[in-house]
Amino acid sequence: MYSMISYWLKFYRHECGLTQQQVADRLKIERSTYTYYETGKTKPDIHTLIKIAKVYNISYTKLLEGIEEDLDNAVADIHSGSLTEDEDTMKYRTHATTKYEVELLFVVRNLTPKQRKEVINLAKKLVNETEASK
Figure 1 (cartoon, one colour):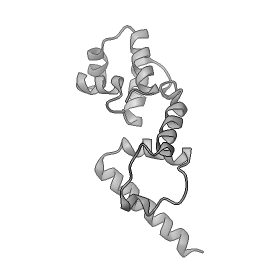
Figure 2: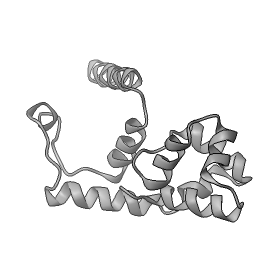
Figure 3: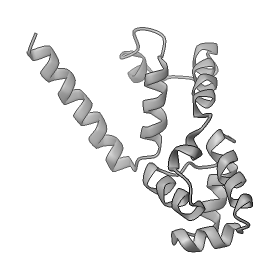
Figure 4: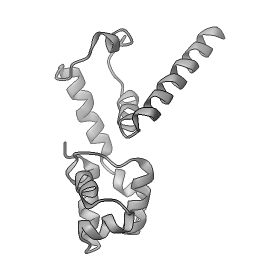
């Protein structure tokens, strides 16, 4: 899915007069990986966004401009019912998804499977600690 991040990656690459291969070489990644970032097939993690911003000599926040619109669209998809959820996911769902939750989802999607498990375990631990302190 094409996103604002994808748009800005392509925009700033053109502004700098660089090819995808030149950017990929500077990032020490495959050109296809960078191409996936520009087409929205995958999203770079925050560390990669910072490296890309350095290549373009801009603040990484410039690459995040307009991301709120992407989040709004994701929330609209969730509320329209176009996304399906399995039974395990539904047991935790008690109300409409907030922008904060969608933003967290975008962040988590950029993690490795191992990192995702760590985040889930940490979140569960925090919930248990909060409930125990009540």
